[in-house]
Image (tube, rainbow, N blue to C red; front, side, top):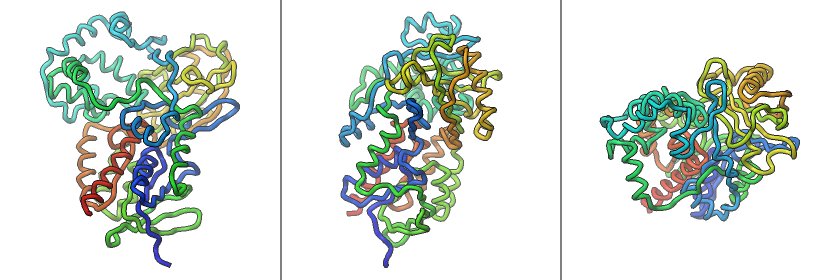
Length: 457
């Protein structure tokens, strides 16, 4: 028997891989998605435990314009549900108490998160001299434009929650590209944002935070069910080799090793795995991918009795700026955001530890993790009884960490990739870490492959 031939193979059944596969499927090509997990969705994984809906990966997402357009094309717009309006209330833990993050100019003027001096410094931003932000960290850029206190008191905690990272190490060109463009074009963040708002047009996404009624895992599975060929699970792509006008794709799975011949390939796996697959194709490309760092995360969902928490629980949740006496990165109040996430009379806290500040957490025993977590929660919200531990999830490569030179590194990766025929990368490490950004990455990979095919005809 000869080697089976396909239109495309997609390595990875996370949101970027599923988006790429569904887009390529529209062209009529036979698509195979290969994933090492026992279910599609990648880090989007949901379990239902004792009446609680437990997210093992992303808890919420934005729905940006590309994602919204994709969902509409797939007839899946009703798969998303908006967070309750109280989700607009968010908190930082500071000086021994939870302080609400201001969500309006009046609230900001009254907020104790910044001193009066820092607020005046922010107002002076349009007067600051323009500089090139290339190679700057977020902390350096925000400190230069808005003041050091804004960088440490506001932006730092925000990045702790989004990236589980350090504002002194994350690169501003990757994390806040629009702010960098505002300075380059307008000389001021404030002027640039006003100008952008005045001329804003084109497709728009949905405002606020979103999830799926039964969790992000079932949402991913609903997309996978739209594929003509079900994903090959508990299998992985181990290597590639060019074979005439196609790629030989080597796969390891439950039935043993096999190889397929595919016209096109999308590698929608984390950068280290993509590097392993490409090592025999382009060593320099593989080495560039290996430079991308990831923060590990330990997620601990807890069932709590509201009356046993001494601080009033409302809103989205809280983030904890890096401080030596607290290991917790933050906590989301999931049952306050979405209906049906906890049994009646109970609340669901999704707690996160680890990140770049405590990388060792990923290898700590459960009892060490829980002891630190309970002590932190007691300090922050006050506990009159021990919460119920519903699960402990460890993800070693959880969140990509785009550093100071990330944009240049990605540009180099794409330059080398463009020299290889009919292969693309997709994933959260390329252009944004959110679910919506990762999905858009998969759409972009499929679009570029389609354009290459059209150009060859």
